Image: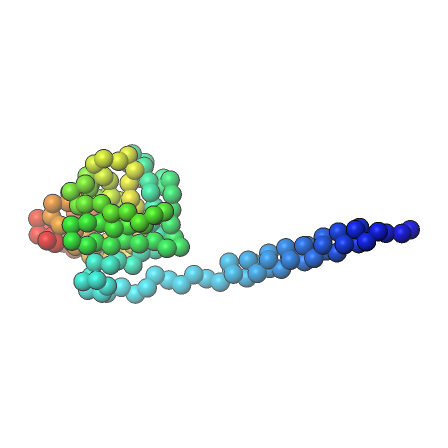
Length: 167
């Protein structure tokens, strides 16, 4: 039985492609088995005047359904309070003024400590997983008193009455 050079070349390409795909699956398996590092240690007063907050993940959710996320970002999340603005990244970096915030709520379950920002002009919410209750309390204390807090958020705030919160 005689094989043409085209059949031999095709057979060699199939064998090489299978080898590369097995190598890629092995590499991906090894990469995914490495444990992710924990959230960086956080001390109030670090970052840009204490307002650059390290986060575990950010989400875009629906206003009426707080535990459902439409989009998430755990690879490159960003959450920053600067002056009278809130900067965040889920897909793209966005900024919102504090007067656009309708309500700030907190939720926690199974090791997640989330702040939920509802906006006046959007059916979507911004959700940030801060990783600990102390970070949630600290971030709530940084918000100006003009930002309305839910009852849960007021209870989570560092024991301060809402009117005595940040500038």
